[in-house]
Image (cartoon, helix red, strand yellow):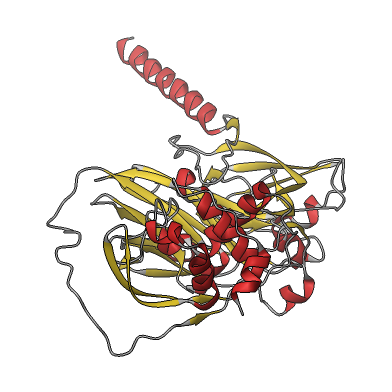
Length: 469
């Protein structure tokens, strides 16, 4: 009897194991709603080991927002922001996608997710008129970092107005762990007015067709990643940037001034196929992932190295790194000596002429003058007018500036070359002639005189005209 009992016991164990195994294989996948984050934030890495059913809810909405200081634009958006939210799912997930078009929208919208294998990336299944919702499903069969965008006709206009974002299909094995992850999308805007023209600007199809944007920006507006909105890290941390290019037209030459990318996942793939990279190309409708370790304290500057786009159209961001200095990696300035190249002539530098409303009060002059200063002057004289020691003289508490208003007007009209003394310090540099309007000169000088313990003088356009004679 014992052998029979033992054999019967083995059969019971096999049956129990089979039932458990069968139940596990046929178990419904975990269901969860995707956590969406807004630029520059990124959802945390996915730690689960198995696929899930993931529900995504995304709203399209047309909103008026800031494009630059004093400049507004009617953005067409996913989630109310440009770019749209960052979506993070896992390879193998089954995704239920719900697109909701807000009742206040004037246009139908849809979504083409480059992560979707199927007709139009979901565009046909998601075409949604205002006040309605659409649903479709897909399986995330390919890992990688993908652009999504609206594909409703006219497609270019929907994208140009701000309808794009990134979806990351995380590989089953994940990516190497880093300390900080950030989300950046570059794009262009084509406005009826020139760069800096104030007020609410509309979309200009002719400029879009000729690919001549007035703005090239990160995360939807000029200054979205600067000053108090800068990205942050500490010395010794590793940083990962998920970089997209919404286009609609231009290729991005993405570069971080003061750093080298340790690893680059080119075109949003899942293999770090390049090491020690200075600048990586991000095509329109494409992406890249870059990893690097920050080793010294500094303010790293994020740019499109098609450099006029950065310093003249807006594609500039900052990553502020705090921590202890490491002089063996970077010393800072060790010596400052005089160098006199041959020749020293006044240079001419054209700026955009802007038809702006005339300032009627001193307060309005100061407000408009601040915009003129930030656009044309702050790069050399700094945001707080402190200048750069031994290079660019300070405007703050400047004895030279406060001593002679007419001289200050003349410098902005004609430029300046040769040695001057400011607050007891000698400077010998070239101040280029800026082709500003009489009103702009009056406004920016009134602004500067009102700031940083200067005399509070007011300058009029009439005084500027007189100085021309």
